[in-house]
Image 1: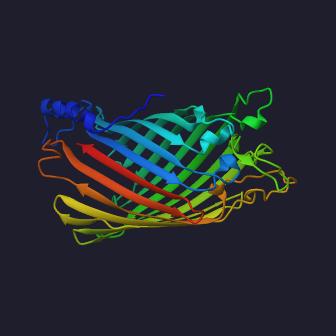
Image 2: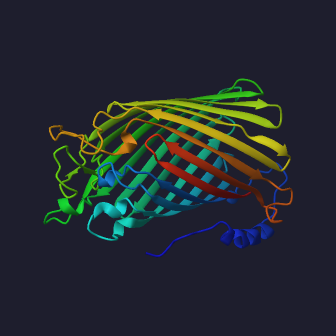
Image 3: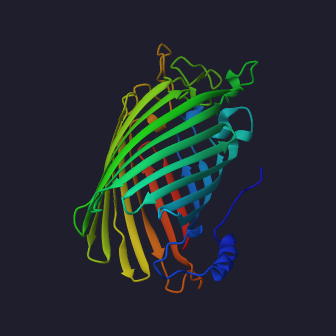
Length: 397
């Protein structure tokens, strides 16, 4: 499989040439011509390892490497009625290699499952009535990889308060997915483990943001998410306590419905002109008996007019779903069972640093490339999983 890798630097020359031929408008005129408002070029590298792979029943390596690349282009115009129209086009390509996925066939040295490419474009459209303070948005998306296909759509509505200090947003999303039934090799029989199963997700979201004063902003968020269809993963093994060997496995079995309810609060406090404290807390519960708490803090500090640092930390804790047990702990009498440690009880810590550079003359002397942002994060989980991620974002405006 060819390696697909798109970097922001490869497109710098193209956008620089465009910026030299596109005049800027310093007046208050609202152009009816469609123009580029912002372009984000993002590349990231992610690597993890652990010892609780669900592919091999809750034991074995979880080693995985992922290279992700996206380009996000935002275009704006004003229609004849004076309403602001925003078009957002995003295209992403990931390539991953996974030692755990390679163990779907325990007898093979290497299989097609050991690496894959995911392609995920999306398109959104928003129209804003700045006079009334309302915004209506719609969007579509898709995601394609070897064993999974997803199509999504969303619609949203926002309304600002009369004094423009608050905003209410309602959003509905739907995802219609197909899971390719790639079973562990020893469970395929004569069928070869082919075919697909449907998985549908519907989400309703409400949020309200409020500017309390010139230093303090707050936002409340609530979601109701329902899923129906095939919610297991076909290549996840489970070994019962009477299993006699690596080929004496069973396929993960989970209910075909799930109801999720996350509730969150987000706040930002400005300490003068150079320091911002951003905090976030989320509570989550579902009808599989998983509950979780997430607490996050990030403190961007402006060290100069052109350079800032942003240390961040996130703590997460969750309970196990009622269908989880580890390797050879299920007794075979249960209707539903999994040994996937992503739904086990665990605590995790994620900490890192962001760097933002906005030189006066632009990145590498190119005026319209005004921001370069780099981030590094280190993740540890109480189930002995460790991961690291590095990302770079170049912004054209």
